[in-house]
Image (cartoon, rainbow, N blue to C red; front, side, top):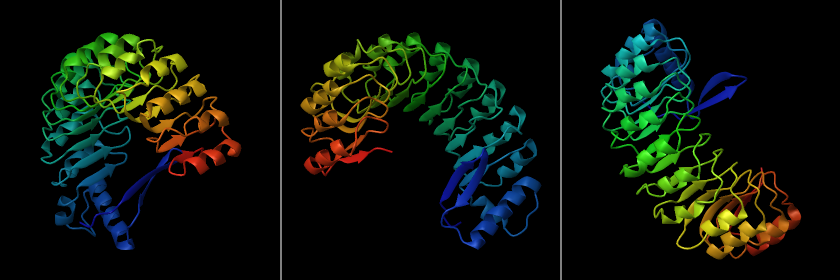
Length: 346
């Protein structure tokens, strides 16, 4: 089938799917496929066209529709929206032979449903955010040998799930925002050989976890936003040789912590310092180190003079100053000196 760009927009809580480069014929074809999935009625589309579908968003999917989804034999990406299906119906998903990405976020799935998901051996990305799954359910996923990206955001998982996570040898991205993970759980990740991105936002981790994260050999992105870290051990991240993206927003990290961190050999493609109590001292440290490419200082008290202190930072490519004290009086001279830097204030 023709490749069609899809834009999913939420307006007043209603999901609107727009086909960006679709013709009226494309729209008709998609609606015909939807009709088949909903009712089993084959009209305006052939089974060959249905079998060729590779990406599908099933809004309001029900148990009755699950067997018909299997007609999409080449399906690689599937999102199930709504709360109308049960764990029992997920057994049909194990019949997919090419499924790589599965999004079940905000759905009614529980640990019982994960037994079926654990049978989809081709899965590389699984989103379980805001579902009712627990540590016990995660254990049923250890057989997914190709799984690279796992989202457990805002679920009931705790440190106990790390025993299962450590058996997922291909895992590269682990999203644990707003879960029951603590320092004890992060400590277990030290020995993970493939992990590249670890998101701990909104958890109870402390400065102790900073030291553990620094020891994860291949980690290139760490998110500590809205955690209890105070920054006193932040300097340990200089030992993380592959770390390139760091999020410290809405924590107790201050100028002194960042001055200690931002020294050679530290090099960061992105540094997020939103909602921090920082001053021009941090800007001076960034300029001295010349170690940051993209910088976010939105929702801080950074002002015009502070922005100008970044002029010597030749590695800097962009800076976001949303809801700061930076005005045109500061932006204009900065732009004249550094026209190569993109400044965003929205």
